[in-house]
Image (cartoon, rainbow, N blue to C red):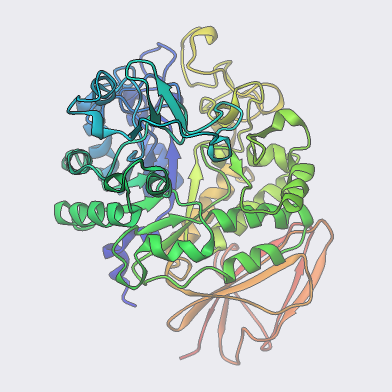
Length: 551
């Protein structure tokens, strides 16, 4: 591999940072974050070292689902600013070497979208087929509801025409009929619009749910193959901007994952979030046993060299555990969310990582070291870099969508507004801004922020992480994951102790006489060796090395 390849397929070497504009920084003092505030923090993101910024939905919306209920695919929510301020953020980010991707919602709209308003007026409306309607009672579909505590099925009867419309999420989010060429054309037009304004790609929301239209469509003409949709968007996007990319929210079993990349053709998603490895990580942390995570990583299907996995520990939704067995899920609940108020939808947790790990800085650092050492592209959710907590009093997913904590003032430096006017209250109690904030950590070499910045810096210097071949290294300790990622004539070796007790291991198959051994987390110090690598790992300890052959 040539180092210049990393610029062509930039997503394979990216470090992604996700934020919600409305909870990041309020520049005008109205209690809601905005693009003017985000523009003031682009230099901060560059200082942290991230090179890809993912913006959660900023489109006009009733905001009943944190912006995922889109009212206008081409607009900017006026609370957040306007198109001019959006472009200023894009241009500033690009000038600092940061690419920007935005959410693309193709599964549904808000019920206040003009298309749906027209669709529900009459069965003869020209917009009727923009959505999925049926004139017969669908029966009990409660088992298919994504939010079982909020919805009792995926069809809702509309009084205006006496027919039912499909919605896999909330009833105020009717599913689009992607089998309608006019809808597909509108989606592609929106993709082209944002590309023209400078975005570098899209995070595609809820991709597998497009296929549900196939199962639930009243007629065959409404059946949708999500792979056809992804191929069409990918082809259009590539014509408009050759190096733009798509990363998909695709929480499916391993057997189905390869298809969403496009298989050998690699003509659908460029990247996919690895939900299975994420869930296995928490099971391994709960058991202090690395084997579930190792198995999940080894079971990944082999993907095309232009494709990539996106790894993460936390995102903006609930911490879903749906791919674990009932017994495994209960183990994670018992370890990290034993109280009912910490759980949501019967399948996940509404918590951030530090509180789940009891605030133990050793364990928190080990978890992020593990994330950044795995093959793939690491993704951070805003506030992770300083160890923010959650607001359990907030409903569902909103528990982890609290304002960014910049300093120790009552509003955490997020806004000058009266606290009662904030878009959402700041995290309370021991994880509030008086205890957890950027200002206290930014110049502290021992802080979590400094540690994550170091991980990002090392990661970006070593293309092995994003491009190399992964293997688990044999050693006898269940609590330890030791792995190697090899690229050409260089490899990275990492070892993580998921347990609380100190452990010593010996790795015998990683070094040869004459190899150079560098400690990547200790200033690239060159270490002596005798052909074996003897490691003493403290409780929750970890080490990263680079092995370079003498030749």
